[in-house]
Length: 487
Image (cartoon, rainbow, N blue to C red):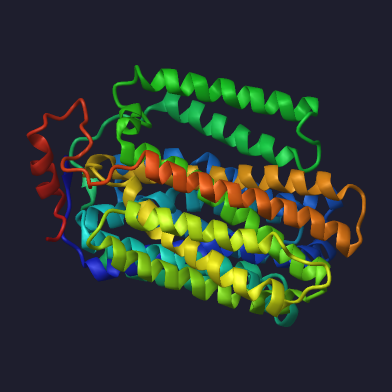
């Protein structure tokens, strides 16, 4: 059971949205600054990619643990702790003088984000009851998340060009301070369990090791290839650890991830869908960015400006999805959203080496981003439908893990296909062919996401919470009242 004061719902939403914005911003803002970072700190060519990869590794690897920890030790506590770690590591990264210092700081950022991101989503799901209010809150959260990722490219170009690469790290500080201030003033201080269950240590070790090695193995494909012994051994070990984790969770008295959650069609369907959508979205973002810079010859700053319509489309799609799903199920926006994103990517797949922004980028950007925006908010609502407050962090950590893994694995697979098509050629026409292939495969991912939404997600909302074996069915309404969710 949980004890929780009401807090201020509007401030809780603002704090969660600002935190998610800075996490999304950080995933893309650093990419543009990599050449400047390499020159300033003397990175070896093969080591430079770890500035990006180590963040993805620690963020993805610790999300399940972070989600469960916020259920056990308090969502506000983990939210504040994660933000503080993220902010301090951003400062350390901005002041780094050696490559290892920056890589260590980036790892710390990933750990902080892995604690705060699921806590933020769990705070929203326990502050806003299921129905229109939660859908609206998740719509704002999703729109801000999407805007952070898309604006990161623009911010990275502008900061690197006019302020220096260190500011791609230091820009996080005022945003983190704002999120912390909002959390201190509006997030309930008592959001922690009265009776604490023990942390599933074995599950935490197996899940963190398995997911971390899975991300690491996928990242290795960029330098070693999919068939190398190192890649195969890493992926095989990851699979073994994850299989052991699944077995251990069936026997743990207080599991890190209760596998019974996956019996819910909402939870299972939403996590598969967000995995597929993230794989398509991350890859599309990557290929379009490279197309504009390496084929059309646009500068980093111009490329960032060119992504503004993409950002606007994501926000607009999220707003429309919020209105649609206020009176209908998330399924009603997920299906058309995934199909619309697929249509936009199909248009993108016809990119031309002699094209231009107006003819090859603007139109498909608007369609793809609007469709993706229709998916972002409803999928978060679907993944938390029927979840009791005591497992809100668990469900949030699972959804964040699915999205992170989908983006990482999807990008690695599609980038490999693009490189295979391009071969060793570096001329714009050959690069264009590789990017077009990657975008075409992304179309299939969104179509498959639509199929999952149609075939798996229920037509109606869950009437009762997903049952927990340790809680009597009659206890669920009491638990919800104790959570203090505003009506």
